[in-house]
Length: 390
Image (cartoon, rainbow, N blue to C red; front, top):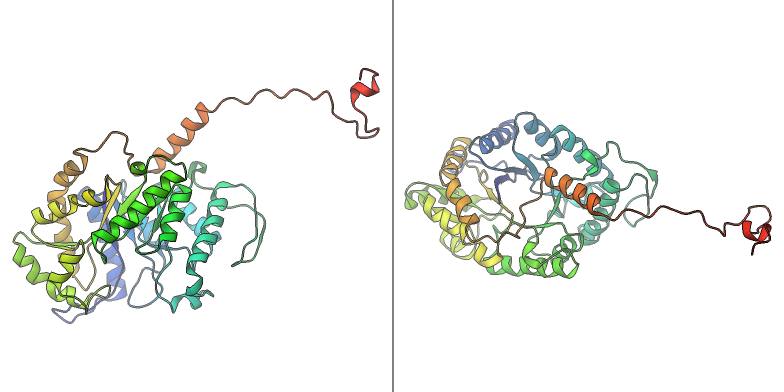
């Protein structure tokens, strides 16, 4: 089970002080948070991708490459890679380079993006979002898996004899998760390819999350990738902890009220009742998080949003320290009752091992025997006919 944190990279005024951090501060803070995540024993750090204010992470590979140079065990991921507005060729190139630089510690979460004005900035229309996600990802897979790509689609110029440089590390592409909150087409896409499905359940009820994950699991099995309970599932989540639960609620409330991702709507109490947001003591966060398996089954990755809504870096690092305190119990709780056949989240090492094992177990191709009926390219007759033997 992989546990980690993700950032949407918002630049939001602190509602308790009125101070807005600079872009520079937030970018540097993301690196500090990632290094802290590795320090406390987390497995994953993921960053979003946004190209509009009030967000900063417009270049995830630059940020993750810098973090890769300062970490050694942390899996680096994207909380969204915009498969709709990015060119698949550039995605393939950039993440192949990052894969080499990080010694394979990278995967991607594909997403469509839900900010309409951003699409035309990249020559796209949000009404084509699903179609773009399907076509662009199909091309991305070919680019990572075929030495020479000839391709023609609807949304970009054709490719003739294109070879990706550099090739993926060990010729094994990064693992891909498909992230969606409400689109069954994306769950189907993930299931069709046997990729991971990530449901960022910070906005919706667990009943909705359960329906989306179960759809993906059923379709994963339908497409022949294995039993439904072996499908690769990730969940988002969010918490705010203090030793005393009422202190947590009092401190977090002003941040919740103005959060750019869900503020100005339901009350904190209503949102906690309807979604997986947990504000309280470490024990409450532990119990609530472990309860997710009751709805979605045993899964592979849990990421928490920890640094949004204007929370100062000092507070975020305190939250990570509290998470570190319950981390052993989280790991123990996820392991209890987990059947042996449930896979772990894929890593570069496990994907390479699976590739090599499959190659070793594949039946050897029979030695090709020369055909006795090969036609002469001058006479058009077989050798047997020419020799009077047939």
